[in-house]
Image (cartoon, rainbow, N blue to C red; front, side, top):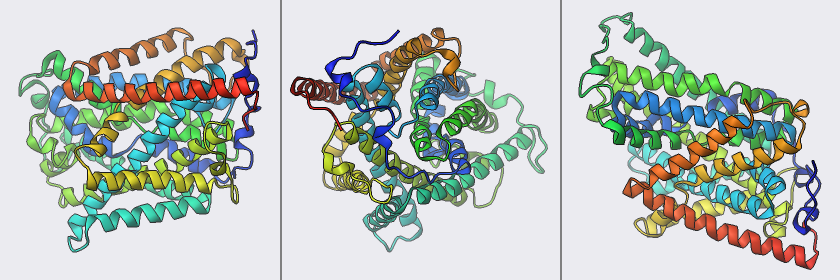
Length: 469
């Protein structure tokens, strides 16, 4: 079944033309490690403490449930990206399957999310380094980090790939070492450390000390800890073999999530009491290593968290620049920014870094107002992105023979509908908490503004009969 072309879809560029001229400098080892390290971020090392404090040992269930949702979303995104690789990833798919307004909306929403993420990560990384070198102001470190990763992303896509390869290697090594030490301690095989048994799982209020409300809070915290997985489908468009790269990355998502997130949460709540104040600050991983008597645990984890922040910063600059380039190439932004130099969208890189640096300045000038509003506007953005992915995959799969798809969504369309229902359920659950409710409303407002702007832009382009580049 083919869809009758509308003025908007008829004006769309041929598949893949929005990526014409981009360099293909990423190797399979880059993509594999980006996919592997993409699930290991600061949200896991530090942010997971809030989920543990709210849900107790039941945080394992929360991370398992949200991890299952993420696996379904990534499988859908992998199906579309393996069939039609594009640097705009889900924005391109939404553009083709739902309409240009949808591609405009989800693309620019994700761009804002990544640029704000660059600012937050730069500020966090600067805070860690300032603790080691208090004589240097934190803003100076922010400037150094921003300038360094901006320059590396301006040079060549291979630079991004190499940095992410080694950043991811360190993160994977750190989490693997933690899991090995933790499992040995749980089994009573670590010298000088008796096996804890089930005391921390059943004591201190039981397995579900916070009841249903605590589990819901833990679930919301775990959902947002999974951000960053989408970057691999953006990067795949600049790899040597995009279809194969996406397929490999998506097919290994299940064991990565189960091992790194669910496995480490199980180790943490087994080894330390969930209500230990150290779980929140300095963080659950430091709390475990300190409890096991590992020397220099806090500083060791600070190094790992710093690497995780710098890795996310590098990935967000890359992802935001490619998303911006794809949007502009499809007529969804100012054309001068679409220019390529040496296969790199350097103007898009500068624009993305510029917005990120502006967000940093806002955090210094108006931290409680403008910067807080900016953070709230992207607070639930990842859920909106996931919802668009579900709808786009539903429409694409019904028009594409399953036999032609390198990666296929499991049990289509039932699991797609289940994932979409789960996303809507999480959005509803956000209304039960005042802080999450504010984020939901701000994100809804930004999404609505972008949707209206996208619809008006598409209508104007269709009426004028001017094809998008």
